[in-house]
Length: 233
Image 1 (cartoon, one colour):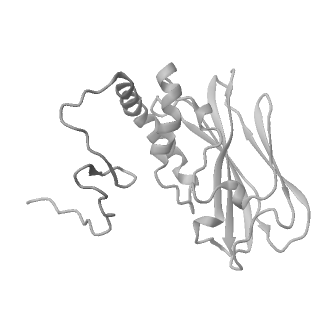
Image 2: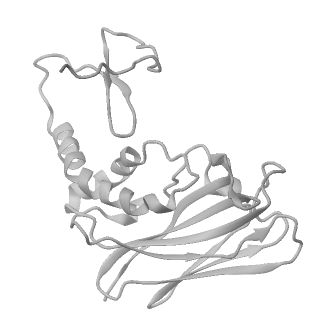
Image 3: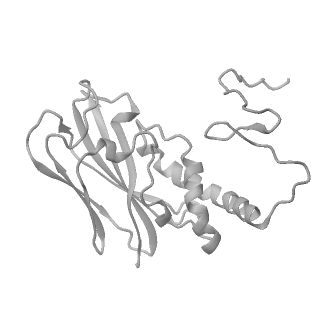
């Protein structure tokens, strides 16, 4: 039986069919310039392609390990964006250096600092990392009157992304804070660091609630890599 023909009704118009071709990826399709027949591949492009191909399984492991913590987000082509940041260090060391992801935003249109309006502090100790966030009226932006509460999550990913089964996650979550409360307090999230030699990255996520339900729109969420490091074991 012949395969089903893909529905292309939602595909954007090709800007120039003679120059661009449609490419399908796991995170959506896009147009790219066609490569002329017989065009030689230069060494820089070959190195970039090799890095991208070698990194793909590692980035997929990172993404899958974090999937459980991305509820509410609209992350888009996370794998492609991570690949762009990690490929440079990878070409030099052959390792996916998590330090290259410091500052990485999981939502391009809804960055953490547009939602979390106060400065947070990250302190790295010998065996754990600590996140301190001052909580008061106006700590988190209230985009509409449907949201009632907000809370914070700390996610620490560590391990060797090149090795299947090596990555692990430490997790901490705060109690919900009411948007209507005027009480000033400090949210503290502590996460243990790995005991063995390992690279790690710490993510901070802010989420909003609509009563007992998660907020519907992605603008009520923010998630960012706020610190990276390597434990000495």
